[in-house]
Image (cartoon, rainbow, N blue to C red; front, side, top):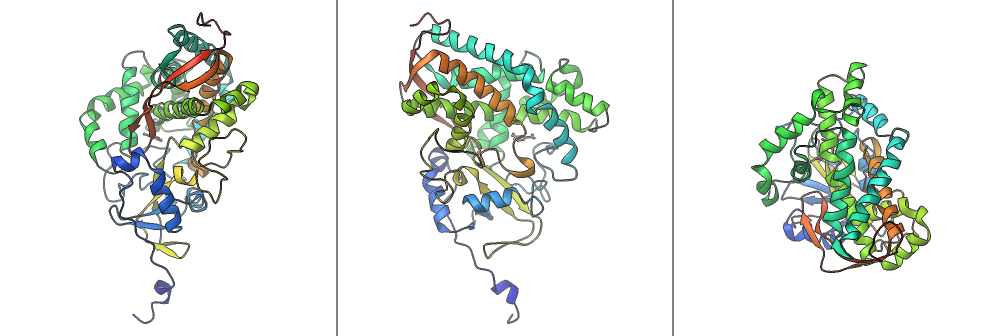
Length: 413
Ligand code: OVM
């Protein structure tokens, strides 16, 4: 083929044989990320037949180019053009314009900052009550289970408007969903037997009759009444909130609490300047990247930095690696409230950027504010434990010891 000038103009990418979804790498991913960033702008992973992007510039470019890197082929390694998904595709995360536009507009309005204002005071009271309750029991506790898990579970399901029964299924359901944005492995295997029961329960919560008036869920059905959504889309949009809205926030709060337990000087800075809570949350999301990866599918042959990515093949984007790329961030491994974390891709970027981020920010603001008022000093009281997930940088336990400030209503002084 002497005339293959277009082909010969492209460079073969470096190859990586490491499995980024092995338990060892999931437990400690940063060395592989550094290796992938150093190897080149595009790296090929023969194990999964995907091209991977681990540098900030390329990850950001791919996230904002939905025309070439589509989501309707699935945002995990499974290519929906050839294989069925484990559930009907999400009308938000597993779709592209124009089908994506209406669900995005509707849910985006319901979860926009002005619409959330009525929740702020109630969530602040709930956070204060929870922190008081935890501190009352003593200065040592598990900040992951007792705060990071407990707080979203106290406020978010009520805001959506689901029933009280069965809420303990939300976290395992989300865990399974996020494992299924990665490859079939021991993690997906371990959850497989729970899928029928958990899915049936979640799907039942998405029905109009199951949702209380005024909640996010009921508002989605009202949008269908107005013709802004189809009646077929409404329960799937409710399902998106229940799939993507709990574990993500829980592990982002876990990231915040881990950050402060290991950086007491940053906690003092936040106590001096509590208006930094929102910066603190974004910096924790950048630093830990609770959502580590997403895939896209190439809509056509695309060339990135001279490497050809064939049409209809998968691209794996490392958000967590982009968020620690030294080419974009100075001293990226440092958790530092004096940096401006804006531009991080922990919530994604572009048309699919996290639609629930304002809800998460409000939850974080309520919890951190309650803690700032009540906790003078924060430290680890034992080794923190990770929970391994194919997509989430997650926690199982975060033992802490605190010195209460004597404010709030805690009797522990
Ligand atoms: C969805 C969705 C979106 C993001 C994450 C996710 C299971 C689900 O729209 O259903 O995790």
